[in-house]
Length: 77
Image (cartoon, rainbow, N blue to C red; front, side):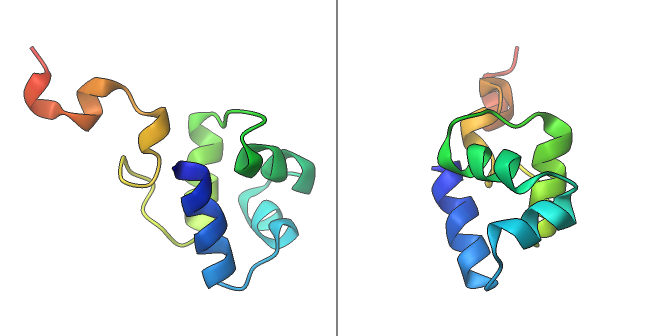
């Protein structure tokens, strides 16, 4: 889900993987690996990618990588 959102947002902004990677401070290979699901981004990378893609770095964009307690706050004890 998140990877599809990343690709669609990048395409919506008419950005290449290289441009997103440069803006996020990543290599193109690293960004491509994240977008394709080959590697998992760390929190700093997720924030940098969100900024590069002009989205809010929150659970709605990165839902595949968030702890359940963040997705369902009413379940927190």
